[in-house]
Image (cartoon, rainbow, N blue to C red; front, side):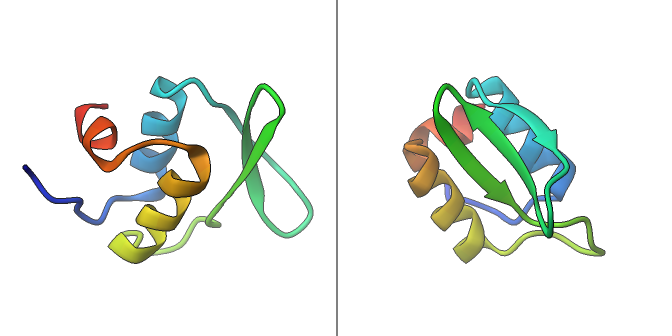
Length: 72
């Protein structure tokens, strides 16, 4: 099994769109994406990649298994 790796905010948003989420939409402090009634907060744009720990938290909250994430 391949391991999760850090990715940019743009790659995160693209993969979440492939998983059925809409957005990202601007919010108060953070941008967010939604799928049906679920709202998912995503990190603000910044230099560098998003750490694996945060990616795990985001995909867990989104209901995506790590194996499915790697296929997106």
